Image (tube, rainbow, N blue to C red; front, side, top):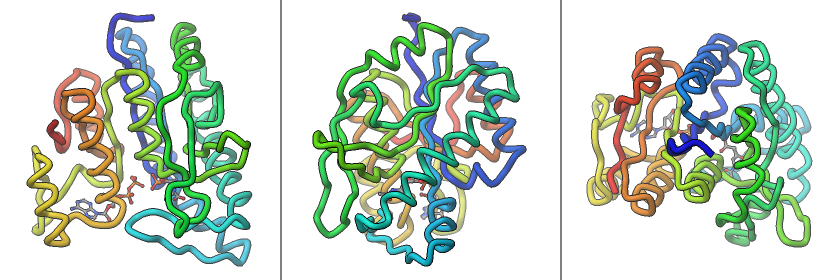
Length: 259
Ligand SMILES: Nc1ncnc2c1ncn2[C@@H]1O[C@H](COP(=O)(O)OP(=O)(O)O)[C@@H](O)[C@H]1O
Ligand SMILES: CC(=O)N[C@@H](CCC(=O)OP(=O)(O)O)C(=O)O
């Protein structure tokens, strides 16, 4: 494998509703590959799941940023994430000339997963498994595009928050982690970008209600990985072409979540 640390890039679901955003992201990945920077792409698809549940007459309920996942919703959720979302991104990769493998956390034993909390239903908590499949894909110069659907040892499908999915893969690969959302980073109460955040500062902002919902889950996942890897995790935006250009140059982008 390349001597460069693998870059685990995570994109949020809103990207899937923006063709230009997907094209820019794949162009960025293509440039990173040209520089010899290995990349693994993890994706969400929360808004697509909401749409598909609605179309099937099912309700969306969230608890602290995580989707309550009754067993009867699992086929729709797996279809939206491991199916539609994953294939949309593979299509965008193909257009950009990037060869991809569309996968989920179920593949190649890359993680092990258990039910996180009975109150959340079929929501998974994941820990790192085998890096073999991803190492093979990287060695071919291909892009692994990974959805956050996992399964238990008994083969029951689980829904994993995609920031947590990206975190576990960053740990597995000992890689760098960049979480790309639809906002330029973590914002303060006035909507201004916070350049750097420690655990103590994040906890204070969560207490004040400034960091909430999906961003709370994201910052918690980022802190855990930053502490595990001993280096900052970045939260930035796939919408911002300047941030993508900086990412290609290896510069710090968005909010640095500090170890
Ligand atoms: N302090 C904050 N800074 C930025 N975004 C925040 C903050 N608190 C809550 N949010 C919300 O979190 C969202 C990002 O989380 P999420 O919707 O899970 O994104 P993604 O789907 O990209 O993972 C933002 O669009 C915003 O609505
Ligand atoms: C358990 C849980 O909350 N799973 C998420 C998985 C997708 C996701 O995280 O998508 P974004 O990155 O677009 O938010 C969900 O069902 O929405």
